[in-house]
Amino acid sequence: VNGETIHVVGGGLVGPLAAVFLAKRGYKVELYERRADMRKGKVEAGRSINLVVTPRGLVALDRVGLKEKVLKLAIPLEGRMLHDVKGDLTYVAYGHKEGEVINAVSRGLLNILLLEEAEKLDNINLHFQHKCTGYDITGKTLTFLNESTGREEKISAGIVIGTDGAFSAIRRAMLDKVPNFNYAQDFLEHGYKELVIPPAADGTHRMKSGVFHIWPRGDFMLIGIPNIDGSFTCTLFFRYDGAESFAKLKTREDTLAFFKKFFPDTLDLMPTLADDFAANPVGSLVTVKCGPWNVGGQVLIIGDASHAIVPFYGQGMNTGFEDCTALGDILDSGEKDWAVIFRKLYEARKDNTDAMADMALQNFVEMRATTADPKFQLKKQVGFELENRYPEKFIPRYSMVMFHPEIPFAEAKRLGDAQEKMLDELCANINDPSQVDWAQAERLLKKMGA
Ligand SMILES: Cc1cc2nc3c(=O)[nH]c(=O)nc-3n(C[C@H](O)[C@H](O)[C@H](O)COP(=O)(O)OP(=O)(O)OC[C@H]3O[C@@H](n4cnc5c(N)ncnc54)[C@H](O)[C@@H]3O)c2cc1C
Image 1 (cartoon, rainbow, N blue to C red):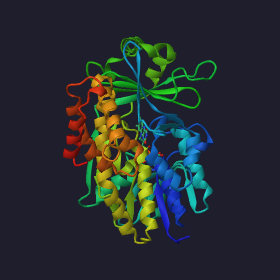
Image 2 (cartoon, rainbow, N blue to C red):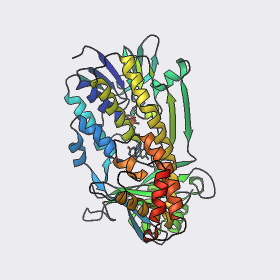
Image 3 (cartoon, rainbow, N blue to C red):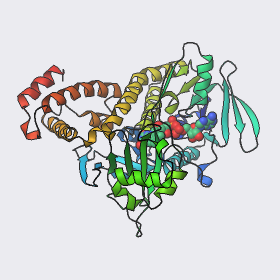
Image 4 (spheres, helix red, strand yellow):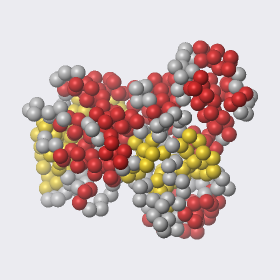
């Protein structure tokens, strides 16, 4: 053991993975989590029932030998299945190369796996029901409410890593006390509600399972992601207020009429729709940008605590996992000074997480509105064809973000913005990929600097 103890606050998805990265390099880790131990009974799992793990997340998991274990829990998704208002289906692949899939997993099972792997290591101690209520930066002391005893505990903590999520207590302490700490939070006018399509009587999925289902309706959308138990978790992204909004759906009848009008093909699949809709909460969707993420070598925030993003690229957790990869790389370079390690991490990640936050917001428009536009599908096909013809020069932005962890997010955004303009020009006057003017495409690629 390196003799240094690192106090990790937050045992969600990023905290236990960061702890494993540190412990495998010989550091002692004390990890504190507000909730009770999820392995011992049914406790609320967090922000969504299932989520997708993408290759960026898999890189981090692979570094600590967990990739295959996570993939065993996952259903690979190869593309989007778009449902129109009549119930007609259109399939759009995510990529067009072997293995270009994303992986649906249960958040609860993934969190349990990460906690178990952390617990297996002798130099990690897990403390549940420890809610961080304060962090004194000057006195280097963490305060917890121990929710099993009701007592307050003060812990002297030389090095702290905050992985306590979008509403981080560690970040709040930095905001209160650190001069020149920048902070912005931005809530969407849409919230989300989770619903369920239960398995069929024989335990199988009631819709095609290896795809991500989307019901794009312009200003709002419903999505459906399969679970390994045969069910789908569906999520309605919808305005809080306005003509079509959560505020307008007050009764069971309102809900059923709304679904009948906009998502008629789901009605038979969701026998408990009206009850679930009334019972389940509406969650908020926030983007957080802040910086610097560290105070010297004393405290660092990573994961949602430093860069919460909206979920429309399925990259929030994956981005947090990428923070762990970057931390591991810096530690492996032999750097021992925590002030340098934390600063380097911030410098390596900040532009990339900001870019991912912006792309996630842009993708909301793509998912809820543009996917239903025939031009969107044409542009996708032309993008794939460009990748086939000029693999060194053109990788569609979606593929860069999802399937190319070696391309940093900021670079994917920069190239992606230029590609969008290029595809708009190439597809302006055509209806079919066979009509593309390839001489024009080459000129535009040159102009893009590709
Ligand atoms: C609807 C929805 C769908 C999503 N889908 C995806 C997806 O498909 N793919 C993807 O990559 N990301 C997705 N995300 C984003 C993803 O959920 C987050 O990015 C991810 O959970 C961040 O991990 P984290 O460990 O930083 O924070 P969290 O997972 O939020 O964990 C924080 C932990 O800290 C604990 N905690 C909080 N406060 C305290 C305190 N004061 N003291 C002690 N402990 C505390 C919490 O109990 C929690 O366990 C989605 C988000 C939403 C809302």
